[in-house]
Length: 215
Image (cartoon, rainbow, N blue to C red; front, top):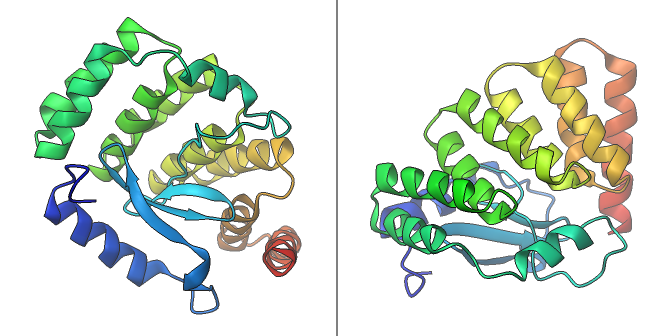
């Protein structure tokens, strides 16, 4: 991760967050920690996710189109906008204002380049600017409305912003697109439980446990 240019403070913060949120029942040998752009990512059965924000990252190295992600894979084979590489370098250096401006320029340069939305959305969420992150995820969904991870990341930002009912809708969309998405079931269960909707919470918790056991 140091070779990828990620600042030490970001590595430490990501690992501390991972340790604090890791479920005791999960198998640490089943994950891989690596760098994705300027982020510290954890790879597990559900795919890669940001160790700091908990938001899932788009797996652009996927080759199968059977899970609805083929469109994203095809899009990402194009050359990244120059603005994106500059922004990622600035984020790695700790220049978050410069990185944000660069990611926004990259989106203006190529509105279909989803990596720019991904990095910008995670950067904004990490800074506590949840409403702005929500706007970014919604713009990304205009380009690819059928990707379950984009709906999931939107749900995370909405939940962080305290907009639980809207977050639940986003998680439901994610589950509709990928029925075996355990993390979306878990997050939906937590919100149903917080809203006092025990029947729905139990249903999603059971789905989460079944998927983890089968996995």
